[in-house]
Image 1: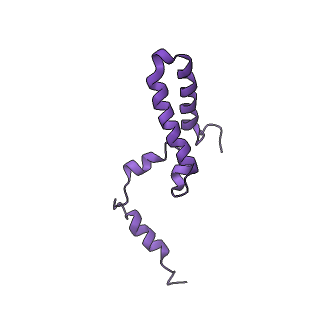
Image 2: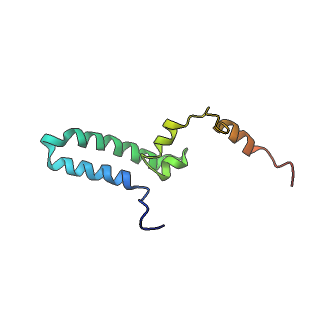
Length: 93
């Protein structure tokens, strides 16, 4: 991986950094600390789940894909139809 590419855990690391930063300025930055804590919990949950590879490899940011693309989007095929096609045995060898 090139050094210019951001790490896939950068968003989670920034959220954890936001928590620790807000602890020093608790009286003024508590909303930032709360938001970072909630996002960090989502990221840690994403890292330990086993159903979605995108969410496991890109915690926090991987959830954006499931907000944009649902299971029924048909461009070019829906995810459910794509799964049915890929499970079919090869007819032509």
